[in-house]
Image (cartoon, rainbow, N blue to C red; front, side, top):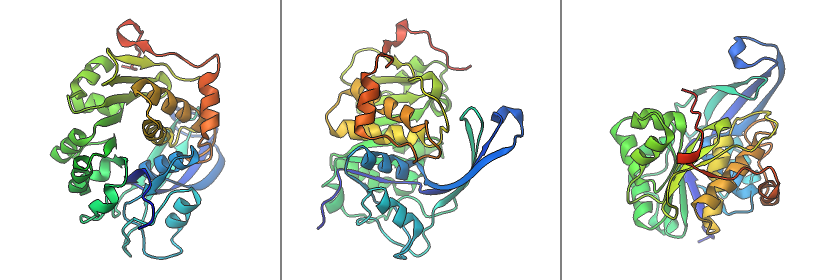
Length: 316
């Protein structure tokens, strides 16, 4: 058997048609400055980020069976292993149309009528040779595979953005590294403040709960640390925030593989995500390990602050 990558993932792969306009999205309309087509998707971009950082990443979700499949070629070109992914002639990517405003904010319209998740009989022999499994909200279609991976000792890193009810609740329970957008965490818990959300999402089986909040930074709680923490954002020139959260997940998984504690994983992931928004699309500015290390060593790198002492603006 070929070498199984340390970090596996299955979930959305997308082809994004992106339009950049000269006004913020709140203006309601604007002139097109540039348009492009790029590859994206939560898990696919996270794995591409791992590979760019020098890690070992493999996509194990459904892929098309044609040898010249565009999605397959892109993953391979991005350094992501595809050898273990199940194939099906009807597999196709999510199609997304993204509008990016002059402030870097974006609106995504997508068609996800596609085969997502992975094969129900995905082999334990492959799973058992990996260390981390990254999944997104579509993993509700393959919950038994996620559960088997957890039982085999893999760290389950969950990028959950929406809920389908009990299936999503089970998926969230299976994730020992739960990384959610703060907006979804608010909906899922019914709580208002980051501290309340972190507490509501915590359980003895968790290794970490992380809430990402774009330009307001990151809130987290880890098994190794006492207390709740807020990491303010890096100050960078925002070109396009598409894929920033996906890059965060990939960089977090990479730092996890290297043995970093929760604070170190969050700091590394936040720096990688900040660098990723300085270019267009979700992949153009994925950083190298050296670039992330350099940003973390800069004098302007923000320190984490214990949440009880931090001023927290959640935009509500």
